[in-house]
Amino acid sequence: MKARVTVTLKNGVLDPQGKAIEGALKSLGVEGIGGVRQGKVFDIELDTADKSQAEASLKAACEKLLANTVIENYRIEIA
Amino acid sequence: MKARVTVTLKNGVLDPQGKAIEGALKSLGVEGIGGVRQGKVFDIELDTADKSQAEASLKAACEKLLANTVIENYRIEIA
Image (cartoon, rainbow over all chains, first blue to last red; front, side, top):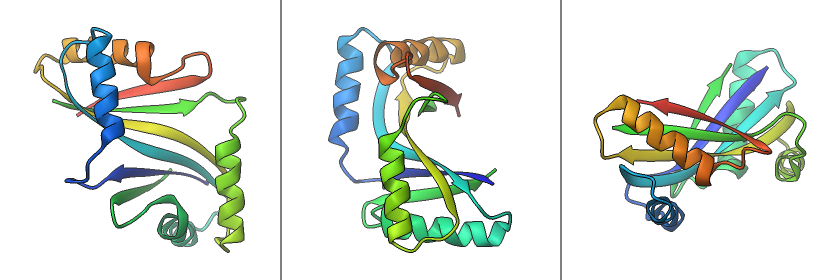
């Protein structure tokens, strides 16, 4: 079973990396960019075929390691 | 107009960062993880309302800056 976890900064949290990317795109002449915020994506292969067990494992993974829940949101999609 | 660009490593490209995350999850006692590959996600705000122009800008952004197309794939989703 495959899953994708997307971790993004919460609204209101400053994102200097995104700002830097925005500036770089403007310098490179890419038109029409109003703002950029960067996040992370994790493609995870699961050993289990049980969806609820997979969800529990992924939630534990996010809470313990993948996301800093003080400043980041995470979203789990199981394919 | 909002868009999301997801950049992931191509198949066959080694991902030591993903391997490290996989090891860390096992150490933390998260069960059932078979493999992890890490990618990046960019949430982009576009100034234009023209979808084809937005697509062209995003493609340019990916090719010039966001993705290394030798080792990475990118996917553009316009919301």
